[in-house]
Length: 257
Image (tube, rainbow, N blue to C red; front, side, top):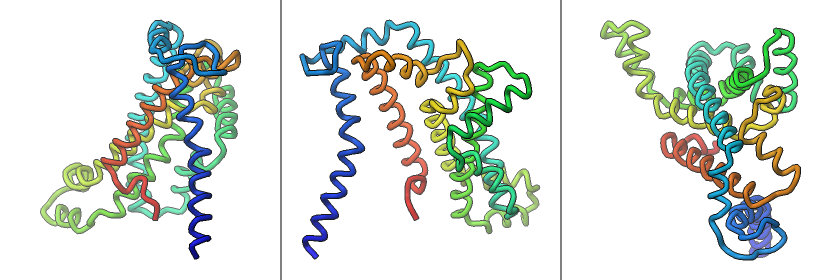
């Protein structure tokens, strides 16, 4: 029994090391006082200063933030509606329609959206990227909202209806405040997924439209410089902050059942 426990702990440590050691290396070498990542030379903040002076990187970050804000807002509204519909009406086809975009591979989703935009003669750019991000973020928001609704006491809504409230009033004054942590958590998740997305963005961005992941990709094709490590560190930090906030708002979001 003791040897089995040691083997399990060893396997777990190796797995976590495989996942997190590269991230630690990226963060550490973002402070390396050398343009090459071959060896550690010294500690410096120069790469973060140069990153702040990089107009192309700032423009790409602005595009990513704009797309993420639009995608998270729209997908939160539509995803909340979808989550409520899946919880109340139990339609078999509705979960398939809502959850399919998050179940299929991203590369297939990107190609399908590219063909869709080409068929409709839509010019690829920020608008097409935002629409694509909304399409796959709706399902994530719907899952979180539906999980929140599953733990809600339906008798509160029935009591509101008995007191003369209309269905809309019962939803706005009773249901929505109760599921608001799930709605906010879903919005934060959608923002995180949107700002980090590369594959779908790559297919739907078009020429001249650059987001932060695309800009990072174009930079690492030449070499992985400390400047790339610096922007990766900031993006990682933003993602972790949003995940922690979402988990604090809705503790069941990251809980496995």
